[in-house]
Image (cartoon, rainbow, N blue to C red; front, side, top):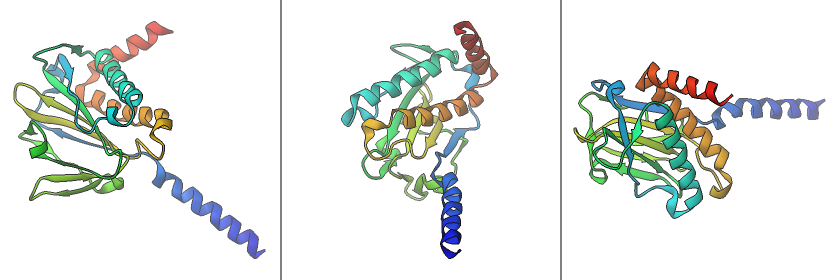
Length: 201
């Protein structure tokens, strides 16, 4: 009887732990930005991209992001885009980002979320330093003309263990984040995506 109780308790603890192990997303954005007015984009490669550890995963991320942007109504251009898109990963140990590491500042009404919730990391407001835990995937969108960060999406557990076996985990994290981008960019993106899905049936 005691062994059965222990087994049941162990099973219950495993079920309770499942949500904690799930990927979580956090979105920060500039409330003063009219996102639906953006029409063009260009990728900028970050120093913490995946190319260093897995060129194939890096290419997968770029193609997935490119697909979402284009089917969502944005056109990729080689110069003078409305927005730059980049991504970061905390691939080996924690990732520390400071505004001095980047080429842009936050938008005038940028609303920082709770970076420390869900295992994303911590932040030091006084120094404007953000530390993201290993496995976190960050997608940034910044306004080229105004030189400000207007949108940031973060997903926990985008990578884990052997990075070469993380295609599905990484793709899932990016899909969740880009759905959040669609919501911010507006109904226009969702409508275009539905049309494209219908066309492929």
